Length: 336
Length: 264
Image 1 (cartoon, rainbow over the protein chains, first blue to last red):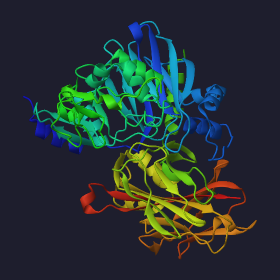
Image 2 (image 1 turned 90 degrees about the vertical axis):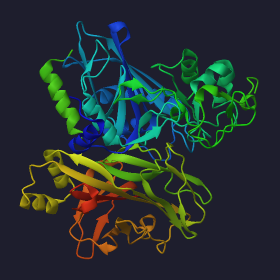
Image 3 (image 1 turned 45 degrees about the vertical axis):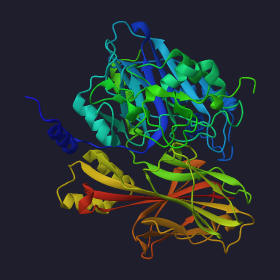
Image 4 (image 1 turned 180 degrees about the horizontal axis):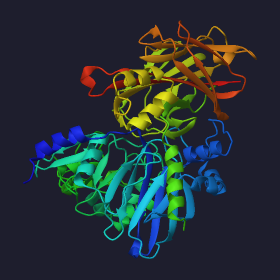
């Protein structure tokens, strides 16, 4: 007999074990291409990581030393052994020693810090079935995405084992519910589909918010398709000009796990981080790109209905994302 | 590949990093800026000056303010941005930056909670738990951050001192740390809900050597004095815990005060 959902929610509410600190800006994702190798990508604040590595090595840096990306990228490999002491990659309970690649991008400004992308790569041990992860270079809550699942972890907390065969974590729906309750969640009712979207509250998907960004600006990913990445790229490039990077984009996907290749290309070449559609851990599916998932927040002056000429501002709930496009005047020429 | 027992050992070592409770403090991008300059206000969560950036999160912020001779102003920041806020140094003198968070829930296993109580000098709560036969029970807590930072612009003057921001738990320096002479002590008062808090553990640490912590208990007037022999950034912190109000759905309410500044 199935428990009514309300009863289940109440049970979860009282069974929950909360343990959470502030959400930081570290994100970790693990992938296992073709089941032969593993690639773990850590996106984190480069200056904060180097600072921690330095303090652990007995070196102190003044707070005013806003170091450039190149300098940070040079420094990171020098602390590799220190770095490894607080990272654990394991398969079936056996720790492995991955190769590490570092890259740092973005320059320090008043509102942004350089972002480090650290890749831990190696071959999967023969017959490996489960992946486990521990990252102790953070004191805040961070996300680990492995396969289709995202788990919220504290620094030093071992992840739940991830089954490599399916890419799914061996977690129950109840534990997923607990995660939502731990983080807090908001629900949005979709006007068209009548479905509820459950989102983690206080979650900022970007490791770095671009310069001059306007918070909360969201676009449906069909807008990206419509404009094409060649036209979109100069608008997104932070160094094109001051008006070229004035929005943050949450790229909302429709029934797809991964980002469109064009979007990925833009993300790789810029300091922008695109977020796939919200993953509803309770229902175990990608959220539909309904109106709630592609709400247009304040400051969306560059977005309009495809069939109209005026911008679609200040309407969070009644706009179909499928019909949105970027206004042509918002495009910045490649020649600028 | 490491053998399983080594893996377990590694896990134990990694886990030991997270056993201690985490502080939150403010790290301005400059402690001694020129007047007129914009200073980034970074929020950090961590332990012993090892910190992680905490982006601006309106849902967590109860108060995020700066106070100087021109008055009290909100610290502006964009959602998700680090530094979490920006402050313009409008006038020479002391600029006090304050961050007070909304209470957030946390639940800890008994062993971890007891250890954290010992680390933070909250023996009275340990005793209270023992009296209630709760030592072996998990604990639910709501915690609030009360972080301050002192930034100074211009020529240091002894007359320019810290100010009370009205946070539930607050550390207030009684002398200007930027005008301290060599060998002079820095007196600090700890207040809880505006009244001096006695018997509380106050810890001071220098960024260059955060493991060398200076600790002291507040006297009846809530005061402690630290001899800050080393130049550089200092973090002074204290934690206070009380039984949580009935509406909080928690047993305990903790307040985490911190104060950062730079000594020369």
